[in-house]
Image (cartoon, rainbow, N blue to C red; front, side, top):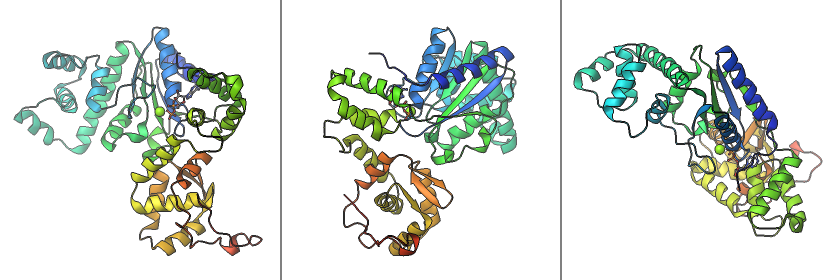
Length: 383
Ligand SMILES: Nc1ncnc2c1ncn2[C@@H]1O[C@H](COP(=O)(O)OP(=O)(O)O)[C@@H](O)[C@H]1O
Ligand SMILES: [Mg+2]
């Protein structure tokens, strides 16, 4: 069965409008697409790219995680440059050199482009580049970005997609950033998609002039369509699983990935799918111990928590650099902040993290009386 994209008509229409504006006005447009894990960014972008392909328009797409249902190649600076230059991975170094000379504005730009492509430079060439100041190199990089966009557009590219930008290493992000500051009169739409994590906890300053699309939860009709599709793919008759479906739609709260997990799990209703437990384990294992423990404590409190509760935890566990821990928690993309309060980005994320705690883990904690005067102190609940 082909991969459907339910309930994203508004977003697709918006992307096409921006692209058409860029085409009609020879304008370079930037779009920033933001959404939590599993919200459907990659699906939306893959659908957009295939619609462009059907209309005979060229699009270059890259991602920075192992592709699941997106076929986008993994981003690397050389691979990205080669795609913009329309040279294949199999091209000989002589052909690449000829292309570089065609695209670059001057000898220095050509040299810098070869360096960016990890080409072998001779001693003299390396020395020439090492003598340039940081600002001069930056200027060259900007020239290169402009020339590459111009060339790609000349070759019919109208859209460039970078998915999972939150996972990109700093040097790759710096490189992408050069493109977003291009002021070129070329009809290209540059789309950057990310979760709210790492360098993207807040929309970065360098994307100030981008069109921002925040992916909203899928509406119940689209979720119902997706549920039917998922069950059919599993060879199940949707009519016979009405109760499970209704429950899964409610718990997934508009997140298609979570809906898939809930419907794919054979465990009874209310159980937490194995994939989500695994997701929580992987996230926690990848974090410094203090950060993982603070997140588990927060999850054991419920869907939201506040600075006072965190402070109690920090005091009790003698956390050495609490602000740093808090920053790393925000960088994880699993929680969001609103004033003094923090909340998990999705109830199932909180459930999944809580499933990784033991009942004895935070038994020292009792609910602070002065925060909820009418409530009796209660112990943290845990699985
Ligand atoms: N609008 C949609 N219609 C149908 N399936 C969807 C939709 N959005 C997402 N999915 C499916 O849900 C899963 C998670 O979506 P994905 O695009 O990978 O999320 P993200 O990239 O935001 O993490 C994928 O299997 C995807 O095919
Ligand atoms: Mg994705």
